[in-house]
Image (cartoon, rainbow over all chains, first blue to last red; front, side, top):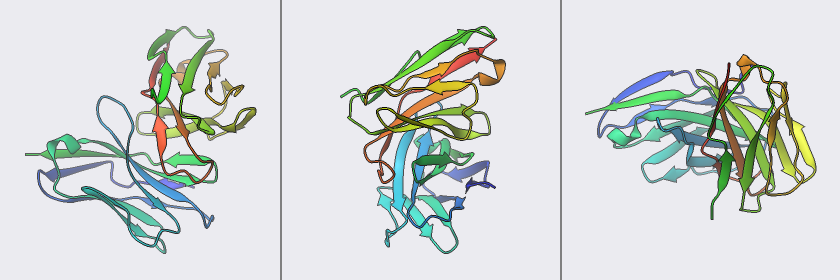
Length: 112
Length: 114
């Protein structure tokens, strides 16, 4: 069974608009962490945002926010005011114990 | 502060050859791990370590060996390379076992096995 599911292989958004990238996860642990990473065409992995399973508030980092719905086991990334430089692959990941498990990613393309 | 350093960045191997991908971090992190990234597959965990002398298998460990003799270094060995091991490899480290919220990645190593 997939531990991390990203159902959107690709997304398009117009510059300055907001976009939501979906992520659902599966775990029986009570303590876990959820991450989002950005991978531009140059290949490096850039950390965006983190949500701990016990955090009551949704995480925010600048234009990025994580819509954490624990009961639904979802951790969607919201990017507000999209910029052309946001075009990249986006990966959701879950830390379960000592393992960090990634989803298959969503390719976001921002157009003018 | 160099962060996580991977070498080499690019490598071409012939089937059956062996090689070692090097990974070093200068942040005194306990946790280090290796991933491979294939098209459409995201990153898959190969091996990980929670401290010197301790290693464990991830999702796709077959064909790879690791060791952790020091806190700083976590090399990944391919004993007999196969075309199926053509991939991009990432090393990562983090500060606190199991609870760290910042995981640092190396820049990746592009490996082609012909």
